[in-house]
Image: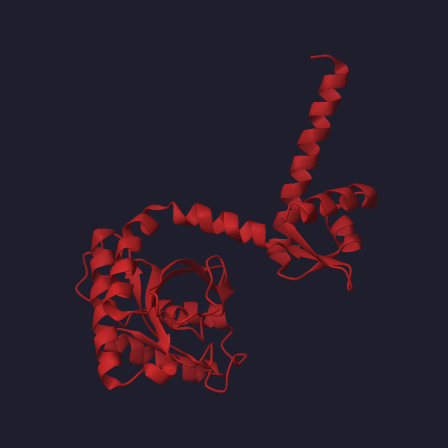
Length: 270
């Protein structure tokens, strides 16, 4: 390889490195950034940052707000992330159980995990009459206002819950959202006692969810499953049926993953 080839190879590697740096920066900052901010924060010449940013926009890896002249992570990344996560052992184990839950209830069944303090939807199974929710694959939601999220929080220590939520006021998504940490803690204690979580129109006004955590061989909560229904269709009989299905299924999945416990929730401190 001559000197010209060496230089071209170096430029390609440098560009690839800068793409990774930009993705990491936007992920860490958790807010849209301008061209000037990206250039300054990564010490990249504006001309180079301009070329890389718009190439990433063209490919769907970034989205541009043309009015504000800012850039944020694009939907392509979430699609890739969901695809990668969908090929994990957990997905392969859980998906048939989601299909079974959906078939038994006629509703939508979900799998989600906690990622960087947020709920990340990994998989779902729907029937023809399933309720449509905003929980699309790869999308993120707060933990404190979703059944899946509260199912996971109830499996964490109080210290971990406070670290994730901030231990104070919580931004309401609907008039029924728990809006303060103290109220959330009380709800999490109820979840631990009964063995499953409920989201009664706390994230979406028309949706009711029943959820429970799943565990691995180290007794570590690694995700949660749920059944989602129209709130208007829920009654005591359906709640009892759905909760029994969710808890039984969560235990079966957990045992398939190596969990040896006899129940899903414990009152413990890390």
